[in-house]
Length: 343
Image (cartoon, rainbow, N blue to C red; front, top):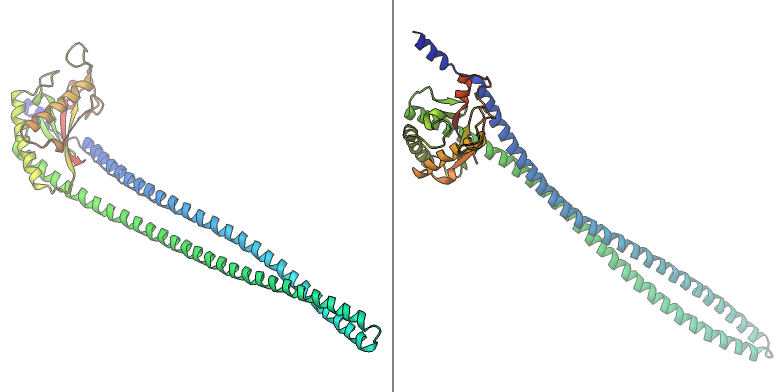
């Protein structure tokens, strides 16, 4: 009766490690989603940076054209002022010519001098007309140049508007991509959880309900004594039998999970907190836990499990299931854990 009560006490399920593992899985999922979000933000910042460079270049060209347009307008105004002066001079010359013609008809004695004066004024008038014609030609040329500059500015503004439209479309596409990616990730996590549940259920049937082989949270746990002698990383014969059953279950699982789910079976090695002497094969618990996880992985590969679906990790003494400093707690902490997770 005492032995039965002891076994029932040993079989008491500790839900706290499962809760901690569930929180760890949730944290890993959140970290992965944050990484995706950071990547999307990085791609968006690269796209916006390139667009800003184009916008700055277009704005610089618009400023240069605006300055050139102002200069041309100033030149045009100067020419128009010159034309106005010439026209005023021309009007004055015409007035003088009329006055002289009046004087010529008034007196014969003054006729010769007036005629000479009229001829001189006529020559000046023709010269001023030629200058005025050239000024008008320059004004027309400036008007054409100003029209061309306005057309260039209009084209640049259209290009700027098109660039801003493409920026808005790119932002919309990136946001939509992020939403679709989040939905796809959620679907993959749900599918992987379903396969994990089926896999652990199958392992429970294959490996039987033994005290030293159990499920804790989302992990399948082998006590180290089932697989390894004390202080060793060589799987014993009994442990090899259990690992062969595990290998068959994993091979069947690889046939059932779709190829587009990127999954791995992580094998974690854990030790207790008793330091090693350092004179044997392993210097510390880090090396021992890593070697045991690697030994399990290599055994599974030798029995047909695809190597790309396995990961080995050593945690030493730093992830205990039971923090108590008792022989029973140290025995529980010496273990190999199997976790079906995303790569």
